[in-house]
Length: 258
Image (cartoon, rainbow, N blue to C red; front, side, top):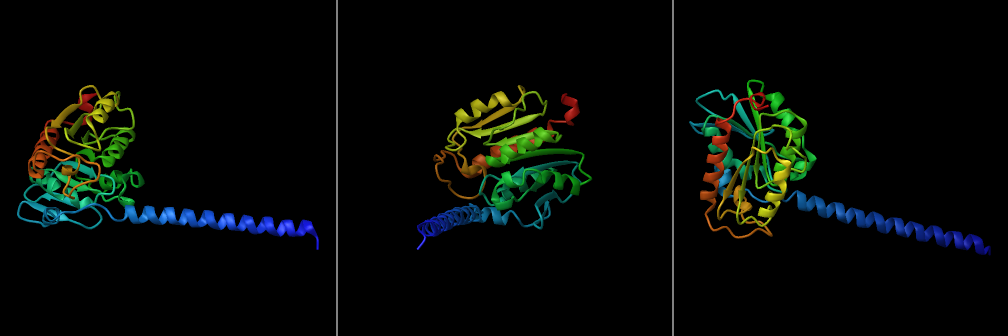
């Protein structure tokens, strides 16, 4: 028997085995990632209750989670990008309270519950609500990073970061910005906020929530690697909503700040 042919068969067989092993490993990794991404945190019962319309706020839950004041036609809109692997409904209580103050608030669900896969979803929302004159974009954690990226690439009237910081340099963009963060945050730490300041406009407004943590920016329960909060979720949410509303009310259009 030809030894060269035998060697060729052995080599081909080994190559096929290696390819199969690689395919199996990649399949396991992809499957694990999909299971992880498609099992988001939350929402808590309080968040589900906030999805019901009442005499003050109209709620729609079709393509996006849309909160609109029932007694007036809003002219200012806020788009919220959820945190990574967090169910978008987990931000419904805050969105509802902001809408109650006269603003359109739209929470944008993300592909695979990660904003990196839907960074430009705000564009679709803005195109859909043509009656809105001013648009702000914000987000929690990873959602804030991608909201900042959208603000960097596409003109908006303001940026709101909840426990987040930008990956892109916005320091020279002239975009009015609000950064709300928490002292007990174990994921977006105080060091992260401090380091991110060089990429934000110099007149950015910073609000530290003393005793707050990362998970209490939403209503999805506790979060791994986070620190324990020393204030209640309700207290932290009140600060988030009040500071966000003040920021939305205090600004005109972006051109007024350039």
